[in-house]
Image (cartoon, rainbow, N blue to C red):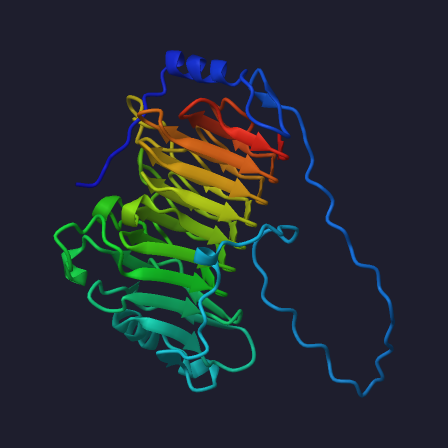
Length: 388
């Protein structure tokens, strides 16, 4: 059964949470009365030029800059489990060398078949507007990798969710008797942009996930951008304009690496949203995301609920949120957690923020750290980070 975490945001609960804010919270940033002192990120050295080159008029134009998402100053080493997949020998190639040959139908078929998917759409950036959601079949794969090569944008056209995987959806074939905890499929997206996805009205297994919905198996995101995605505007536990995730295999974390989340709008979690899922977020950037619900969780009387965690919304029991070398700025929540809303219902979950910058994140009604609402084990750990 899908877990449904809840937290009653009473005056007493908030007061207790704010009281926690006066405790020490690790090295690099000291929290006093709920307001961390500023500890800036170390400067990134800039290599000086050693030679200059003058181009003649006949010199060919410089090639386009490599596709790079995430925090431009993020340099945290990436663990092996979160590195890009080798796609030099793809199972499926979408397109035959022209933009028009790269179609939504071809991608939908390839995702259903599983395997490594690349694109051949020509040398220029291309947008593929999806006419149907690409759905992973649980009996195929067992790995599904989508590599856009830095040139491909998958668009939901503001009308539909872009990518979907759910090991507990019988329509995609049940492959085990424990659909909520199985090792496959393993879904990786890399070097690609997801834009204008919209899962509004898609409520199976809780809804959310305007760009990507993933329940079960494993999900990894590498060097990707999520731009202007949407999900339902109200609901107390519904979220994830970009990504909604549930039931990862054996509680392993989802890795989000070198990726950008901007312009996402949902009831909760304009960027990421989950229940009972651990996340490891490395070298990422979250800007201008919004949580637009109202009434929080559980929904206050007379309200539809939601409005928390504009960048990241996490709920559940025992799970871990880790941010390293990540920037979150100018995100806005109607209720709590302009950057992050984190609740561990049984107070066993933990949150760590290292070498990161969280600034100008607005919490409309409640927070116990700047831009953050946290209820978990002890207090968050802040290390060499700016949180203000």
